[in-house]
Image 1 (cartoon, rainbow, N blue to C red):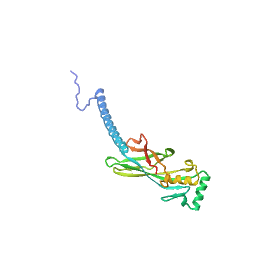
Image 2: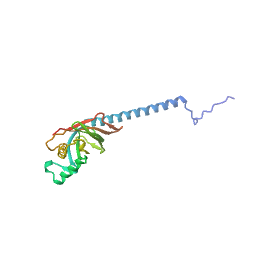
Image 3: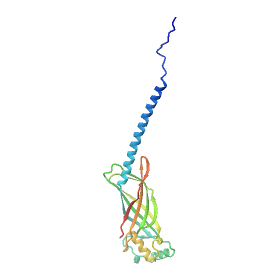
Image 4: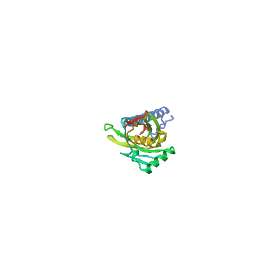
Length: 218
């Protein structure tokens, strides 16, 4: 009697190892292709966001809230108009060689209407120069999302010892403060070097070179 082979259709055949490997490799290739496409899309989005920041126009808007030795300085202020008490405060500050000058410099950031994406500022590193003399540095940590066609105000609070900039008498230092505030008869140029940092889909990216803005000497 001849032996017969059971050909029951319920019995599954085990796939060959080569077929399993080819299937896994095909799935891996698809996953790599999807990941590569996602990376390209993400990279393009990040480039668009960085390009939007490049097109943002920064400008020196104004100086406000100026105080020297605690005395407010505004339009029409002058040394000759100081009260006796304020004259004494300025003189005492000069005698101590510590004349605090406080102000807020306002920087405007304008995103052109033709930009397709908002410029998302994370922070801005800044360095202040007075008449080409480097005075101090800091950072504005207030984030801003600047929509196309809109302008954002970036207030930069500043405080330094005026005596380090001008070591004259009480009148000389007060008139120097007036010039920095944009008043009086003297002329002082203020310059900012800004390094904005933008939020992108790839994470924060800092501007590669400083943006230089000036308030012309008056």
